[in-house]
Length: 52
Image: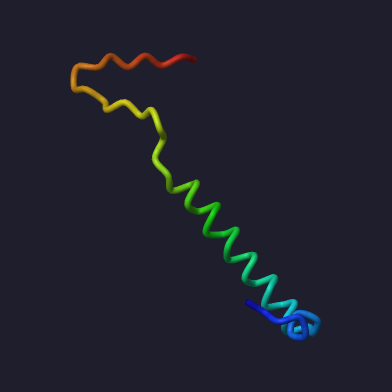
């Protein structure tokens, strides 16, 4: 993606850091947005018990 000479200058290092940060942001937001694996639908006649 970036050649060796570009990676050695400050602009290249900033570009690589920005690319890595965007990648991590996408990975973490995809995990947050994912639905729970075992979510049971709530039924109308369900009894809800609150534990204090």
